[in-house]
Length: 161
Image (cartoon, rainbow, N blue to C red; front, top):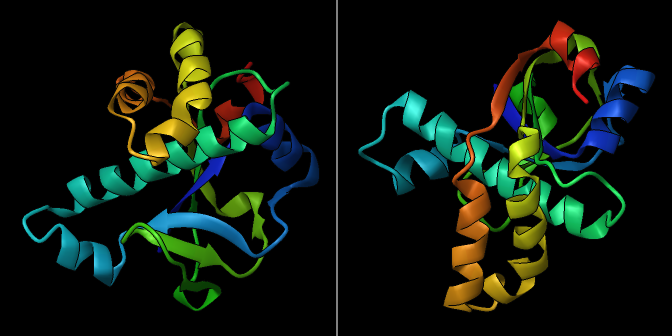
């Protein structure tokens, strides 16, 4: 099953150095049966895009905990066996990955361009207020989410800066 994993640039560097995404358990997002029910009219591509966007929001949460990290969202896409996935609360696409994922199972990465940095920085600062229902803060978070993440093949991830 394709899983979208929130990360950051330091997290990506660690994955490349260690050769795996881990340790487990770790949060991810996938096209789950619950997501299919929740988004009944969407085709597979739309459902995967929804999972990607939720992972990008998860990346904002990681960046909030890593104030020295470059303000760019990172999402790693991996193929994970369904029996390596557990249920998670929150969004209908949320899953728990129950084991480390070897780099060989990473299919691609999505990373913000440098031009998104100011909006990502502002979104990280506004995230807690947006979670509490502040509409202005949500508008700020949406500003970061308006940036399309760049797609990188696995072999290109070494060159992301």
